[in-house]
Length: 322
Image 1 (cartoon, rainbow, N blue to C red):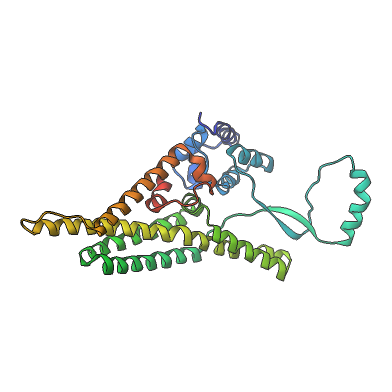
Image 2: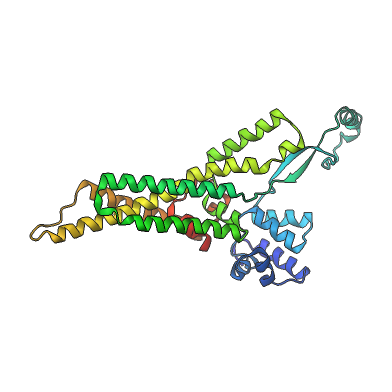
């Protein structure tokens, strides 16, 4: 058993109680059978709390067992207050409960509003995909134009590869969307968008200030649009830009080397532009090797979010398939 042995035992027990197989669960969650097998063996864990909740929904697991699964895997249950609900949360008994019961009843009668806790779930939104596409294509056009103007005409052939990469990037996004596994892409590649969280918090507080009722507080999609926009700004854009720069650098070096070969009797002399191109390639390669090493050896860093802060280029596309 692996580092998540407790979660694996609980999941295997729930599968046995529900008389379901791992292959059946994999089909319902639209993940591979090997993924569910690794969960049951305790080798890995679901990439986010939402996936654990989906597992519980598929197996019909009650609330207590859900909490146990979430804690076993290291996730807290993300909750938020909804004002205006009719059901108040249960409160533990304390030695002062009897003395404060009169005061509590007066406070409850003075206000008809009570607070209950409901899960805050991530829901995919087509607007996020449109933002990803527009930002990605804008970055590609900018990088290609800048590189062509500053490095030279020898790299123009890289445009075909950049367009191919953009189409591949968008295809990955839409594949995740139609597999109903959007949160997998979010939590692998877009985990800690600080600006997005700030915008989401501002919008949420504005909702509280303008109209503190349940309808306004339940506008989770609006909050998530702002939050994911911040994540896209910090992660999707650097992904496309850095990968494009690497491609431009490689083609620049190739063009320079071939032009030197054509000049008979002249040795290839490295320029400052060549040196910068080599540095760009080396840095991005080392960075991606580091991210892949983390994904295999310190998988909690990837799943839990903010420790990395920024994960670069190719890892965004490749990590979901590791």
